[in-house]
Length: 289
Image 1: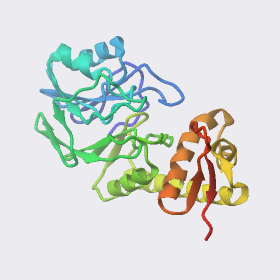
Image 2 (image 1 turned 90 degrees about the horizontal axis):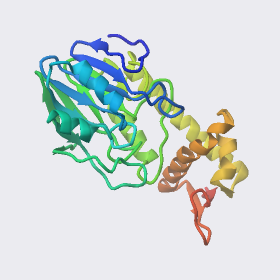
Image 3 (image 1 turned 135 degrees about the horizontal axis):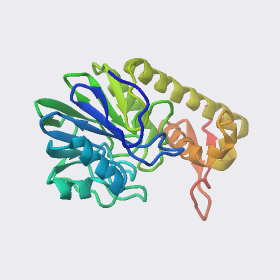
Image 4 (image 1 turned 90 degrees about the vertical axis):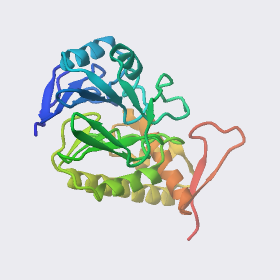
């Protein structure tokens, strides 16, 4: 299986029946850009067609050539993954498959599904089978997809290569995210194909490392709450993320919030909400042992 870094607009063969085209939306949160996967040979499924970008849709169609695109599948409806789904479906006649959700301010409001996913849904294309695996956490409607024959798991934003994903409550949930990671550990996997970054040939080691990283961050949250609480989210962030570039702290606050909400759910931390609540304005402390 190939694993070289993706170049925007260039078609790469990653495995038999699996190709990738990278969208031109690279940045701090998207790496080199969103990975769009084309699955099949005689007919195609497009997975995560990416942002609303006509040039990227043209690159997808060029990669398909004369092979018909029958299905368009999305891992979730964040705006770097699904907005090209509807215009691509209108151009090709392909069916749309995914899991819409209420717009929390971060969702692609244009997405609609002809087939709506549930855990275990099987999607077939050109003799290949993809199994939908519900993996809420990054966002409530997130799915990963296991290409059964090759053991390749398409992870969307549940797992990224070289980075951890941001969890943005309330649609993002750290407790659910950790449960979803452990769920993936039970699968027979040969590689991870992330929504951003390169093919990962060490799936179980990578998943275990992510779990340990999140648990380590959670321990740090508890330690810093004990030292500095009661404390606001903004006040706690530089202590918990002192190993992260301060320019990224405004984004890190979201994942810290998700950690705190998980600890609250588990009866370990508590929050006090001020009279005029704004995001990050809660005061957090550990519950007394």
